[in-house]
Image (cartoon, rainbow, N blue to C red; front, side, top):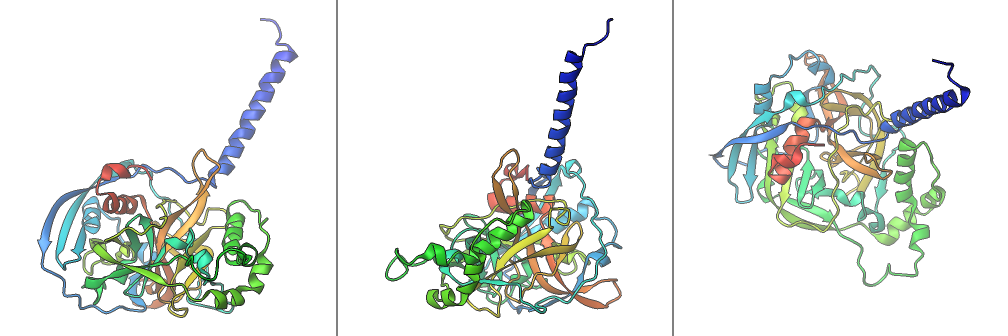
Length: 421
C-alpha cells in the first residue's frame, strides 16, 4: 500500500477531535441530567384485616433514639426477606378500619447498587443559627404557584407535598409514633393554599409583576446558580426592599381543606420491626378524597446529592413559628448515606414531612424539571455511635429505587407503571 495522503488524515483527525469534545460535553451535561433507573417491582402478596387503631398517640416535636448514618454503618446488610417485611405496609381507611399488606420484591439484583457516600464534616445543632436563611412566601401571588403550590399542611401540624393529583407524601411520624396512630388521624385533613381571589383588590393595574417578584426570584436565582452557574436574574434588590410591605398588603394565605381517604405507612417505621433502621422508613402516603386542581411534583432518584453541582436541596413547609405562612429554604447537604441525608437547612417544627427537591435536566431535553428526592424528617436526636449518646441533627429520608417502587405502587396501584424512575 502507498502512503496515506494528508487530505485523508486531516478529516479523520478532525472527526476524532469532534467526537472527543462531544463526549466531554456529554459527560459534563450528565451532571445536570436526571439519571434513569431500572426500578425493582413491589408486588402485593396478601392483605388481611386488622383491628381498628386506638388513635392514642400524641405528636412529638422532636424524635429521639434514631440510629443515624454513623450508627447504621455498623449494622449488618439487610436481607431480601427483611426488606420485604420492612416494605410491607398498613393502610388505615377513613372509616377507621385497618389492613396489613405483605409484599414481595422482584428484580432487586438488576438495580444498580448505590455507592457509599461517606464524608466527614463538622456538624452543627439544627434549627436556626445566626442569620435566619428562610424565606416566608407570604404573598398568594407566589405561594399558590408552582413549585410552592405543591406544599400542603396536615391537620396534625406537619407539612407534605403533592406527588400525584390526589396523593400527598409526608413523614410517617406525622401520623404514627411507631406504636400507634396519632390522635386526630381518624379525622385527618390536608390544607391546600387557596388561590388569590379574583374579586375586589388585587386585580389588574397594581404593578404586581414589578413589585412582587422578589420571593420567586430568590428561588430561581439559587437554582440557576446550582444547575448552570449563572445568576443572571434581575430584581433581587427590589424584591427585598418591599417584602414587608407586600406581606402587609396581601395578608396571610388561607387554606382549602380536604379529607383523607386512606393513609399508608411502611412496616419498617414500626417499633420492633426494623430496629436501627426506623429512620429510613419515616415516610407515608395519604390519598385525598378529592383531588385539588393543583400541579403536583414527580418523584426522582439520585445516587448522590453531594456530587451534584453545589449539592443543594430545596423545600417548603409550614413552620410553627410563622403560622399560616409557607416558608421556603435551600441549603447544601453535608453528609449522606444510602437512605439518609444530613443538612443544615434552617427549620422549625411544622416543616417535617416537606418534600425535598432538586432541579435537573430531563434526559435528552434542554428542559429543567424539579423532582422530589426525599422527605424532610426534621430535628432528630440521633444515636451516633450506638452507645446511647444523643446528638441533634437535621435528618431527611431519601427516595431510593425501592422506596420509589413502593410509593409509586401506592399511588398507581399497579407496579408495572413503576419500572423506570
